Image 1 (cartoon, one colour):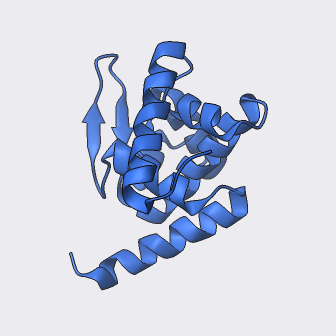
Image 2 (cartoon, one colour):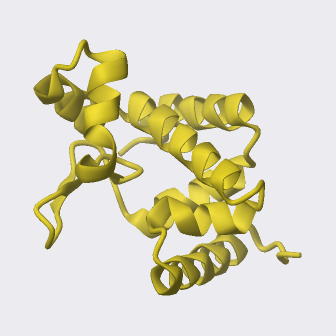
Image 3 (cartoon, rainbow, N blue to C red):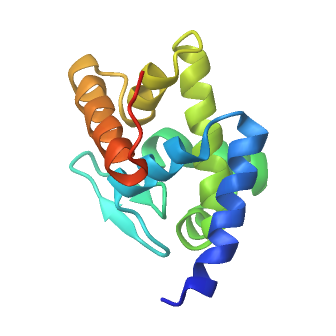
Length: 142
């Protein structure tokens, strides 16, 4: 992909970061760990799928997204989450913000909750995202 193809996605990421008051580097690190991309749907063992760049889980979020944005049209919501990179990043960053709020404002606990509310999965995910953050941005984490 040419760099110019990444510019709109980068703009969406910066906008979502600003709206939700989350550092863009954290969102970038999550996207990198998730390994999502345009049009990707990954099947899970529990018969759900993870969609798009931020790998938004259908079991946890499809119903709400379809109700709020698509007049309860789950098929349309599925397609847009999977194929509209900007919408996926906006929704994924909103989910992250919600997760941080549910963790009493703790950024890293919210990052873990973005992946799972189960403690062992949450802790493992936090370690992965922190390591990716350091690798990508060469910054220490306080």
